[in-house]
Structures are given as structure tokens and as C-alpha cells.
Image (cartoon, rainbow, N blue to C red; front, side, top):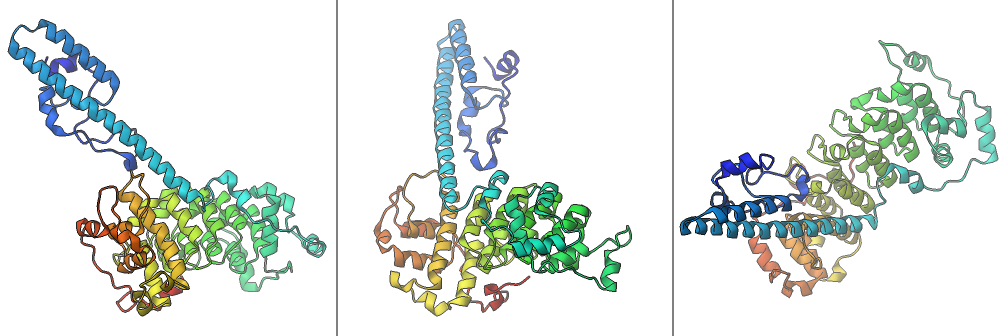
Length: 469
């Protein structure tokens, strides 16, 4: 029976061309297509290729049996037998694909579990539990607040912006106005006039001055001011992230205007970029931004004027390892991306430590005791990045993670391989599941360019160790 007649009998089985991606599977889980050598052997019609489910297998088996009974010549019977064998071969391959898909799912769950050990889940319902427990206002603070005109109480602010009592208490605790009434100057009064031609900048000014309590009141009464743009194209959310505002205040801004997480200033930095460009980056703010934004992949994958993602910025500026874990969990593929100078996040990380520690100290690492001080933190962060990079190239693997083998396979600084050998020298003669030594892996890997991370080339300066927007 020709492919055309089979299509006429069963028109609903119109299979995609070889290599076409299944619409039900995300890009990260697509498996290799079946070999094209069986295409012409099975059916004459090119549009009937590679059955992808068990129902189709049963239908084609039925077609085979009915045709075999009607054929009289030995030649026709031999042709159907060949088709039968080819169909059985494809059925075996389909079963193998299903097994690979199951193993891939297990691997993804293992990666998620590993990252969850340190990074708290990025869900909005769990954000209040991740906030630090802060004491309520004392009697003196409560009296000062009660004496202030137009200052919302904890209850009214919570009702207006959806903040809990603990979150409101954290905002009062961080407020730097000392609850004194601010008397604006003539220029400030003019800026506070809100009209179509001259929108008010009061909220921006309150955020810049760290007057969080008054700013919360302003957000509740003038929510449109959250979209006001100031110097360098920054919104109040940009400024709040730059000034280490309480995470509850960030959540209030995000509640009113979630699109603010996507906005960029003149340097193409979004609020997540700004939060991560600090060695003291607040992990709670990162959680709030990721949980409250409209598109997590958009803000974690956005590049600034230097081609840095938020992960690049966190590695460049020494953000805590918890921040790296949360960013990797939100968008792990960014660990492979390169900025406009050709550096991926792990390279950016070591630019910082070449400046802080010095190239001579890093090059002198020969044994475990040489990894001390700043290099301990450097290696801990490198290990996190290295594991995710390795999982990208080896999504299905039940073998133990080997430092030297992984560093030999991916595009990482040479010093990472050196530190891995110093800490795990026994792995040099250890074979992986493919019976390969690290030297075999390095020889088979693509030729990665050696990057100058010493801060002597153009673009690598001491600012990489202490970055300010």
C-alpha cells in the first residue's frame, strides 16, 4: 500500500518532517529525531514519516496484516516483510526516545533539587515567609508616628498595598527620616505639583532620601508616580534597588507596577541588574523581583550596555552565592552566554579575583592548602557555575560529578582547571562513564580561546572588583 493511499485512509496521521520539533515539548527537552534512512523504505509518500505514538504503530501493523493476505507474489511479500522490519526498528527507537525523555526529566529534577538546597523557592506565596523577622515599633516610635500628619498606620498601609504587619515593620525600621516632618523647599514644592505637563517627582525624591514610610504613603495615594523616570532613565524601582531598600518596599512598588522590573535605564540595566551589581546584593530583593515580574526569562536574560546579564553582573561584582543560585534556578542557560567582550559568567567571576588576589597567587596554586582566603569563595562560586555548565552539555548522567573532568570539558578559565586539579588530584587518573580521563576530554573539547583575566587588557580594570553604576 503506497504512502498516498495510507494517507487517504488515515488522514489524521500527518506526521512532521524529519527533525521537526514536537510542539508539546519545550526546547530544552527535545530529543534527537529518528534516522532518515528508514523514511523512503517505509512509504513512498514523503509526508508520512516516523510514527510518534503507539496508536499509529497499531494501525500500521493492521495495515500490514491485511495487505499480506492479499498479495500473491513472493516479491510483494518480501517488500512487506522489509517494511515490517523497518517499522519494528522505529518502534524500538521510539521506546528508546521515551526512556531518554524519562531520564532527562529525572536529571532536571535532580538539578532543581540541588539548587533548592540553598535557594528558597521563587513563589510569591512564600515570599512573606522569607522576610526577616523584625520587632514591632517601640512605644517611642509609635508615638512619633501617631503625631505625624498623613502618615499611614501599619494596618492601613497593609490594606492598601497588600503588605503584612511584619513587612510594614521592616519598612519603619529601615526608614532614615527619624519620623520628622519634612518641610519642602520652594523648588521641591514646585516639583510636587502634579499635572500633565510636569509630573511630580516627589516619590523619586523620597526614595533617594530613604524616606520609606513617606514613600509607601505616596505609592498608595499616587500610584502613577511609580512610572516616573528620573536621572539616567531610572524609575523609583531602579533607585530603590540601587539604594538597598527593604524588600517589602520593593514588593509594594512591584504590586502597583510589575512592568517596572522590565524597564531599563540609559545603560540598559533593569532593576535586577542593579540589585546584583553589589557585593552585598540582597537575596530577598532578587526573590521579590523574580516572583513579581511578568516574565522571569526576560529580566534574567536581558543584557546591559556591556552585554552583561544579571548573572554576569553578580559574578563581576561579587554578589553572594545565594544570589547566583537563585539566578541559575530562574534561567540556567545564561551560564553559557557571553558578554560583548566574549566572557561568560565564570570568566567574569575570575576577572574580579585576578584583581583582588593577583595573578601570581592564582597561578601558584598547586595543593589544597594554597586555596585560602578569597580563593575559597572564588572556588565555591565556580563550583556552582561549573555544575550547571556541565549539566548543559551532559543532561543525562547518573555518574558522580568530577571537578577536573567538568572543568576540562567546558569553556572556563585555565585557573579553574588548575584549582580543580589541586583540590582533586586523584581525578587526573580517574575515568568517567565513557572510560575517558580528563586529558581525553580536554583533547576532544572545542578549542576555547585563552582569555586575559589579569586586568591588563582593555576593558578589565580595577572597577571590576568594586562596581558602581
